[in-house]
Image (cartoon, rainbow, N blue to C red; front, side, top):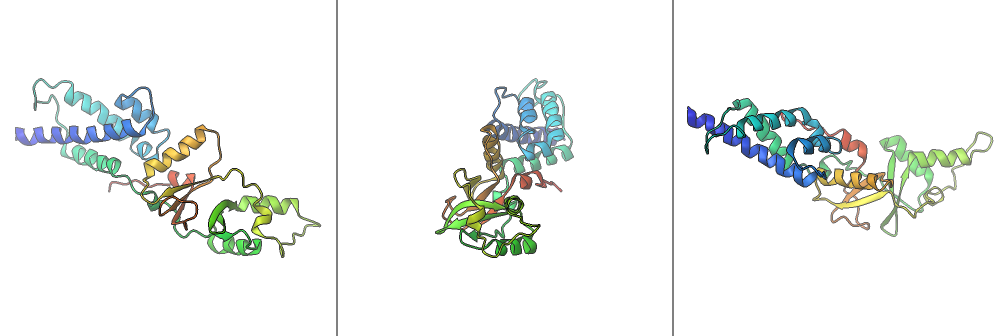
Length: 239
């Protein structure tokens, strides 16, 4: 009986240490204590925020278990099996985060620089997407959004009429100097994607989307498209 209880404590500590290692690697903070990393990480990583309450409680429980230990293998408190199984599940999620493609929009609709805006509007009606990568000579040169189209129409409306017959994507996609897109390889995970958004935010730059390709190259066909909203809507469940 004592051996089984001790094993639960050891399992808890192993899982806790795995989570702690990921926190130290993923969260940039001067204070590397477990609780400080959880609190800072919850502000920038959806995964940490999802399990914030549990992680804080595990920190308290871990202190009770470890700090009161008198001898090797002898603990002052023992966690319940249900608690151990839950922290082990969370540790697995932390150490094996989903690939970014699992949250990406995979049916990416793209357009050529010379395509008509009418064709884009048809796509908006059919797919209800708000962002469309634009390519020229098989290389991504920009991101056309529904907002861009609305702004253009507002500026070129005459007598409440907008003539789109001869308007092409290139007529609307004018600002190509600062491409609001990042390209990443398909092996990237969600933690890394969150870090990209966070770093761009710190630099006070715009990042409309992250495009996932085979090797993260600008001239490769997109496999998926990720926005900041996709990160917010991640559903991390342990059921």
